[in-house]
Image 1 (cartoon, rainbow, N blue to C red):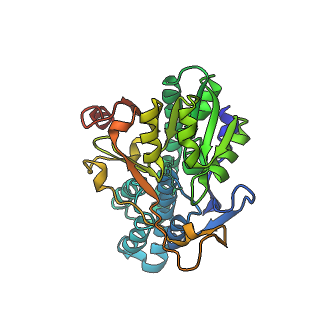
Image 2 (image 1 turned 90 degrees about the vertical axis):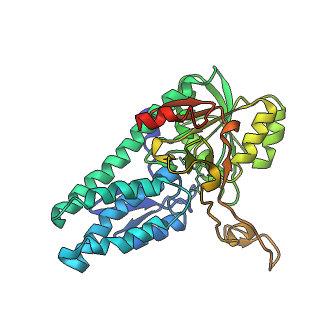
Image 3 (image 1 turned 135 degrees about the horizontal axis):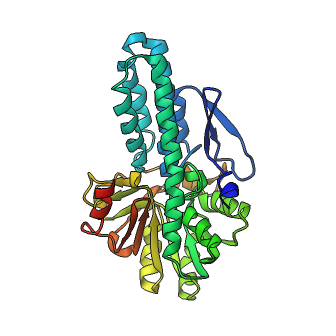
Length: 350
Ligand code: MRU
């Protein structure tokens, strides 16, 4: 199974260049875009060429390699000062996914120790590639840990895309779903289409179809009646930021699913690497929630779908309180009934 499931990757480093699979065009067009300037990488993150918290972090790490090259070309021996502005632009590219800051912090800590830029680019590239590979390994570990929580033949619902495309490969929530299906723990998957970017219909369904995992697409507004039918066992989602008490920011609509799940006795699993945990924040009220352009709601794939002058609200994420979550699965272990106390075991291991 690994060979097939690891074949989808959202980014690659080839010929001294970063390539990103343009996720805005999937599943009907598979176009790789080429990047050699860090500001173009920042734009690509803002504009959803690449998306998903871990994938954003890995992409930004490769962006730092490009920034080091550019800084040396522009500023020579003063290259480190010339890194500040492009790294700030990368940091601002999307506000909610903390993996972005985590990756930039790790790359900054490293480049501050370096002197010679020829080797600097090589050393930074090794670090970016290590971040990428560790993410894939973490996803496989989480897949196994999450699968262990499921009973045989479970029916699950996922929201947005927390798959190979949202990570270095294999996926977080979809990693558990892939592993769970392979272990006989999952018999069927429901995927929310996930307005307004349709990550569920365009990306999640596409990924699962390639692995021949049975999937049914639904509008997210169908979740309540699906749960009321008694067919669903688990909601399994990813995360963009988890606070010290176990509150979770994820794609808007996740909170709604968590409330519905609680009401209907369906279990709620959040799957995310420890790089998604922001220990500096006490609870979810402190998480910055990205507001995206109104046109993403008033238009659909270039077509107007609302009257001219419509005012639209477009928060990209919402916060699910820890008390609505049954399990947070990380590569460092599983936290059941997350709280400030139970989350501490991950801090020790992190
Ligand atoms: O706006 P997006 O597509 O970047 O949102 C992605 C999500 O909300 C994912 O669920 C989250 O980043 C986890 S990805 C493993």
